[in-house]
Image (cartoon, rainbow, N blue to C red; front, side, top):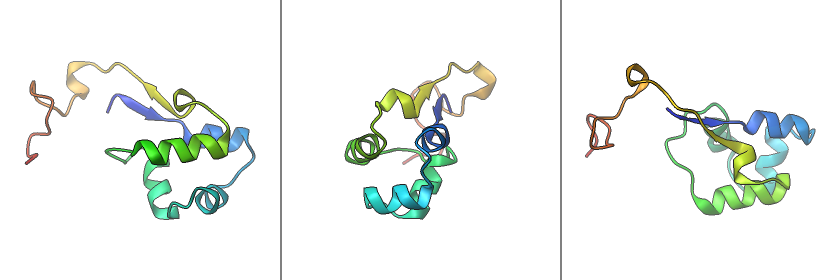
Length: 85
């Protein structure tokens, strides 16, 4: 995926644990863990807004676009996953 999640970096910079962020944002630890590890396929704007509010940062501090070459792509030319419904 071309989006890199840098939540770990922001948590480290703010000296905050994932558990504390979970409690302050009101999102389950499991869901934040999926986001932190880069395994999330989507994020709601309301979630991103809440995370940025607690961490006092901008969305670009958490999410980063990385260009990938053709061998890294999992999407077809339509932009959909091969087995997406």
